[in-house]
Image (cartoon, rainbow, N blue to C red; front, side):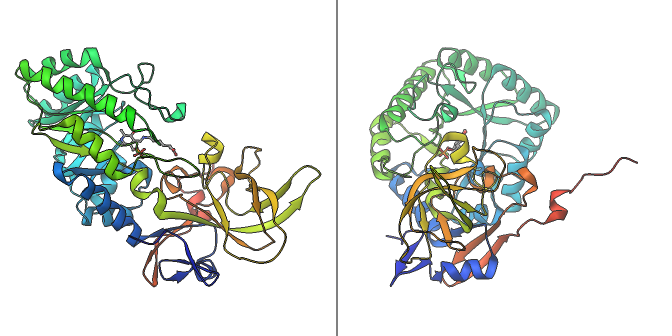
Amino acid sequence: MSKPMIHSNDGIFYIENVPVKKITEDYGTPAYVYSKQLIIDTFHSFRNSFKQFDPLVCFAVKANSNIAILNLLAEQGAGFDIVSEGELKRVIAAHGDPRKVVFSGIGKSINEISFAINHNILAFNVESEGELRRIQSVAKSLNKKASISIRVNPNVDAKTHPYISTGLKDNKFGVDENKSVELYCLAKDMDAIEIKGIDCHIGSQITDINPFIDSTKKLVALIDHLKTLDIHIEHIDIGGGLGINYNDELPPTFLEYAEAMSHVIGTRKLKVIFEPGRSLIGKAGVLLTNVEYIKEGPNKNFAIIDAAMNDLMRPSLYDAYHEIINIDAHQCIRKKYDIVGPVCETGDFLGKERLLAIKDNDTLAVLDTGAYGMSMSSNYNSRPRAIELMVDDEIVHVIRERENFEHLIFGESLLP
Ligand code: LLP
């Protein structure tokens, strides 16, 4: 059982074996910090839970695309779920194996398809008939074969935030379950296409096991039906989406999830692929930030910090909750604060109505920000992106430098 990301000993907070205060003194804030051990342990715990399937765990690169993290996961045997050429190039830069890569996404360009075929990826997760025809034509022009799965839209309600729900008929993702058989038949007759698998991904931060069961059941029924049409599926890719506990959610454990899937898949001889993002990395990262000012208003108290919505978009975008703790424990009175950044938008908050004892210059840690934190950050308000650090026992590694002004204006020029 690995230690939680931040743990305290005699009132001092640590990440692995480094005091958090030492990290902020040495590297400043805002800073994204990850725990190497926690990433490794979570990956193995996920994979071991599914060991009866001999699974391929394809980390969803969009959740955290830092090449040090991709490299760490590749070293543990991970494959990757990508959605762009940029993500495939990151996997390659991180020494990941393109033959363990599945390529999802509804808008794959000709160049992206060609790049992926040339790198012999494991499978394209095809999201439309137009895409299937495009892959056939690109593969043919390259004199190669492209391996595919069809991403089925199972019309299942993932019961998550509407912005991150992807498996309903009204969503733009995947192929309608009724149309998918037709598409497999079309693919079977294409000379540059090799049918490998079937795929679905129904949404993210899913905390109820039933949508997973319902969608996998549909996939399995389709596999059985395709067999009668002499179409043989080698792998079932059940996507990502497993939620984590940010506040009071109770997502299924890896083992509960595995057990449910094993029940549905039964004894069929299928290779199983997963595309987890958040459940592998979410808990293994924190955002450290400094309190610049305390501002007490007539109706509200604000703690104004040096991190903002450009560093962590989730609260502004989805009203997402992240626990916030004060690393500098002290005796001042606890009050309710809105934890807000310097960006000029009322929507720029990382937490609301948090009961905390805070004073100027305290260090706060915004928890569970390993997934969709840095990877969704921006330079809004011309704010340089945060530094990224990886703690390995007693050592802190810089895995991405703090941006500076040169990064901010890179590629821009004045008119002649
Ligand atoms: N596979 C596909 C095709 C996906 O689109 C995604 C995430 C995943 C796998 C990984 O899902 P996960 O295991 O991480 O739930 N920005 C949002 C989440 C967007 C998820 C997009 N797709 C957030 O911050 O909550």
